[in-house]
Amino acid sequence: MLYLITGGSGSGKSEYAEKLAVSMHQKGLAAGGLFYIATMYPYDGECEERICKHQAMRKGKGFQTQECFVHLEQIHVGEKDVVLLECMSNLLANEMYQKDGSLKERGKAADLQLETAVLKPLLCLEQQAGCLVVVTNEVFSDGMRYEAETEEYVRLLGRANTFLAQRADAVIEVVCSIPLLHFHKSKDGGLPC
Image (cartoon, rainbow, N blue to C red; front, side, top):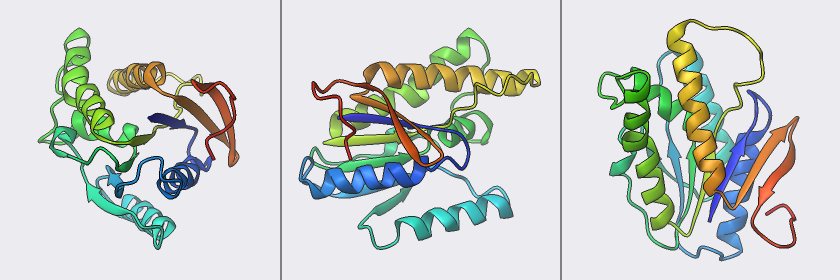
């Protein structure tokens, strides 16, 4: 199962994603471990504060945390594990801007690197796990123009989000801590948790 959770900054998407992952784990829908793949690189004090906030949010929920800033293909999980990847936008930025990242080209060449460095490893993770919850950011509706480098990042994040949404069992946008279901493969159409 693949769930894509999206929303703007401070929307409550991380909290919802954690609840969903814990719920899936408790329901025994995937009866293995409960893993949290943390992708935020501690660039500065602000990032460190956000990391501490997320660590506090998941404390006591049973997550086993694995940090993965780049090279998602190195993560391996069991077939009954529930995995929460927090988050796609950080992983993509790391692959583009970290020295050891794999996404250094731009334009069509970047699309191929995105597929190899991010999307294929995500598909492998989805196939390995019983349930994969991916958090991403909605950065497309502000109507602002950015410098070329930022425009390329936004374009690639859009490609990644679209790819995941097309594969997902559910796409849930969180607005003001309210989950809005955009797509779900189940017949009943209800929210997963």
